[in-house]
Length: 475
Ligand SMILES: Cc1ncc(COP(=O)(O)O)c(C=O)c1O
Image 1 (tube, helix red, strand yellow):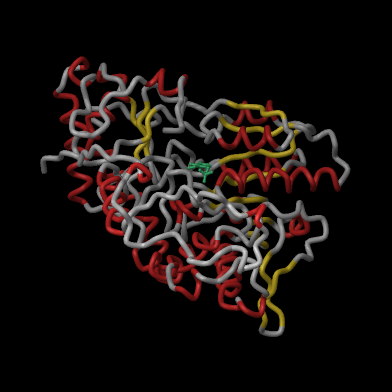
Image 2 (tube, protein in one colour):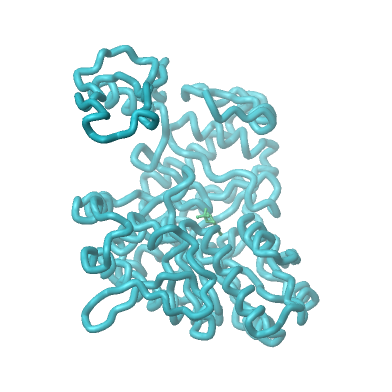
């Protein structure tokens, strides 16, 4: 399939001069409506544009863009799976869409039931005891969980616990959340198999340790089979074992953070269930805890009493609200829909297919590209372009030219010239074969030729240094 992305010389909306058929003019004199003169705005300065021009404008912009509805998008760590349309349909039903986030409980029993049931599903899937769906993203879930741990240690009079230990394979949000929560971050190296280096962990753990944060499988797609030993070591020094559940899609229905011995968990609902990740949101990062942390959870939690759903603020030592309303209701509803649609067996199967797709793709390309930490992978894998004499960024630009999205590049940082690939469960074998083909064909171009890529996209090579140093976020 040859590919050339659409390119338009598209003006800004307020540069249009279509002469609207609809006017932003109520026809009322504000004085007749009792609005004081001093607060009446003279000019709203809204674009005066016809409906069809607005629709065409945004359609053209979308054609210059790339998304999950356009093609394969195996952006490792970001889980850009197909966004099921049934979940969108349910979410856009006016019964859900039009309900006010601050409506009285008795008017929104259906919404509260969805959240309550989702809490129950998440408890069951994770083998944890209590859930709060308040946090609005994965990183927000981590930060909320860190605050829960901090409050717990304050409450149990353990002020000496000032450190959070994190492996070097961790997602960057982990150390950021720990630092924002007021802790000192202690990083430990991975071992030669990409797992936690137990000797380094032992050396790092002490009576100062508050939390050990880890994702399993980790960002290399490797499941750390030492996890029970790790849980024992962390608990022996009285610290909290925290599960970054962003990679939960890899283990759904097979094992769980609770079974592995974790105390606090966050879920990236937008990665594991329906909504794709990326583009800055929206997301949802509920957290789940073992019973002893229940009283510190963000509130409200949705409760059920005498057949009525209600907002439960009873957590006595709660860290408080971490979002203005109940959470990202649209994402919660999509996750609920996805879970209901697939059922327990379906979720387990999806996770198996995601793992199978990863290993299939890895097998197809590993002769050409180096795959460090060679082990059976889970939901994603990381290759290095170092052995090919080409830069990961240049290979990524070649992929862009062929109508598919490149992998995540330069993360995780412990692999040189890394590309992180996550096919997810929602990809066909044909797409996997084509992707492997594109990655191999990239090597037919010399390193210099690759530097001219991409040529088939509206935006070609950008000056990366200038883009980072001289960022212009306004037009
Ligand atoms: C392993 C891991 N942890 C945490 C996060 C943070 O999640 P979010 O981007 O929703 O804040 C991500 C994001 O993809 C991740 O991959």
